[in-house]
Image (spheres, one colour):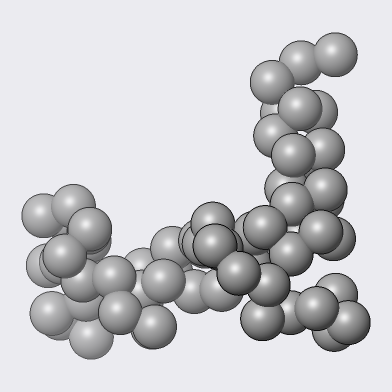
Length: 66
């Protein structure tokens, strides 16, 4: 088993139990401050650098949905 396998397992369990949000696009949902300089330039010149992200949740707003 490798790191990718453990990461996928961790994400699946976390999402299923409501500790991790479903994946979303952080760029289009507010991620400008975490972009690299190159990504900011691309964004500022009408580029579209997507960043897939998840959030660790303290409560479970997705109970029953996921």
